[in-house]
Amino acid sequence: MSTSILTKRIEAARKAGRVALIPFLPAGYPNKSRFWDEIDGLDEAGADIIEIGMPFSDPVADGPVVEQASLKCLEAGVNLKWLLAELASRKGRYKAGLVLMGYLNPVLQYGLEKFAVDASSAGVSGIILADVPFEEAEPIRAIFAPRGLDIIPLVGLNTTPERMALYAKEGRGFVYFVSVLGTTGVRSSFDTGLPETIRTGLTQAKAIFDIPVALGFGLKHPDQLKALTGLVDAAVFGSALIRHLDGGGNAKDFMHVWK
Image (cartoon, rainbow, N blue to C red; front, side, top):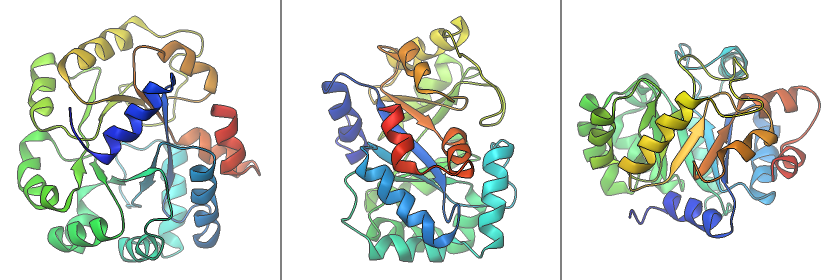
């Protein structure tokens, strides 16, 4: 079993008898100042891992809610330099593990080695690059791993067991299982029960990976967690949180509902 900080956070939740919670928020949303208040709120309310989006102008895996939020952040001048500097100034402040999620282009623009150094120095433990397949990840992993940065694998309904096994060989932290064939937050995929296709995919992933399995894309309500008990180790939610903030709520209250 991996000794990753992220794995440990999820394992601690499992030992407490619950699904670990991984909220997602684009960097700088809803604005640069309030963003850090909301991150503090997520942490104080018991998020096990906090996933921060790295805004990008062409977010191919994101649905309309996350895409619009990310574009708003870009228009406000949010970039990796700002995010990593702000995280560095807060290093040691958060109990939750920190993951950055996004796309390869901004990381390449920043510089792979510089990004690895700065992200690690800022207290980041994991990276999700939604547009990097297994075959292209090895050079990146070789730069990130010595800095203690886990590359979180993404698998889903269309991932064969054979391909999952490839990701499992190098997987660290946790594996992110995508519950829908599409973009984030655009459908209510299992409001009242877990479809057999998702159940089958999760069962395969749990059998193949020796790291925790997190389910994301399509989680809208805490009642959905009931259908996940025993099948997944963690749940990722982003669009629901963004909608909550857009409606005048705050992240801390949102987390209390989900817990």
